Length: 77
Figure 1 (cartoon, rainbow, N blue to C red):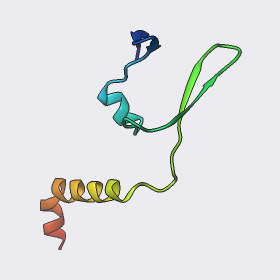
Figure 2 (tube, helix red, strand yellow):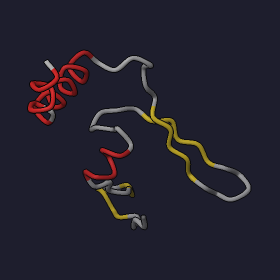
Figure 3 (cartoon, rainbow, N blue to C red):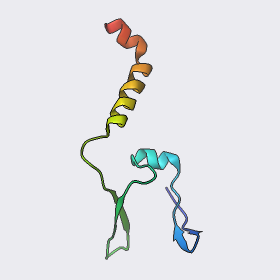
Figure 4 (cartoon, rainbow, N blue to C red):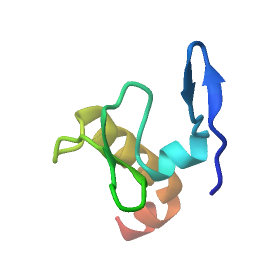
């Protein structure tokens, strides 16, 4: 995926679209650790996460799964 560095106020930045954020499991306000690889100049962003998912994420996933597989779950019951 190619991105362009753009001017944002007095700074520069890269805008990530929603699909990219979903794939990285990031949302606005999440913290990341930024590292520069000296030899190549590569910028590496690593999310700072707790190991356990938040309660609301678990609930949302369960509800989504139950909705998506309602017929299958009903037949199994």
